[in-house]
Length: 168
Image (cartoon, rainbow, N blue to C red; front, side, top):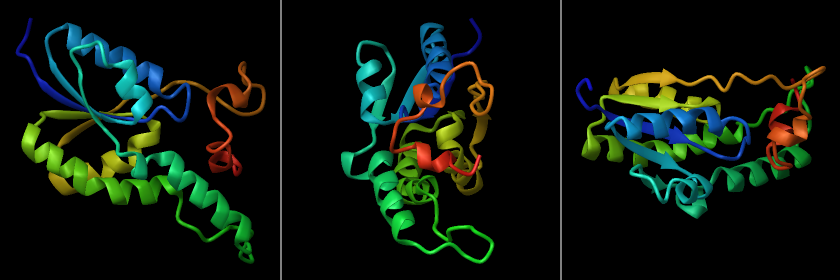
């Protein structure tokens, strides 16, 4: 095998089909001897419990779900602008802003060589890349949702996350 690498993975399970492609890569890299560490939510931490992958779990008070619930409440109370847009920062942006210091601290301690992200963590990964210069690889979930998709939208997105895609 080539040299073992230190890899940081940013994962969230809330989008259903977004996590499995990244999980397959995480497990494959770990099985091939790479040091893989995840910054992820509780369901992912539970799923990876019996593997060699170390998981730094997102604290419950900063779970994405809590941000989405607050966002839904603000959207319900807001008035649309003249163009029809609701001028509220998305929960992914708020979550990324609030978790950035924690992940940057983890990076300074672990010193990964590369970071992997998924669709739901792309904003956080972009901020990390800008702040630390850490190399970044985005793993495209390669699934389509919308008109004429093969799977119902509800199979991949929970009720709290669905409003995030209402404009699609």
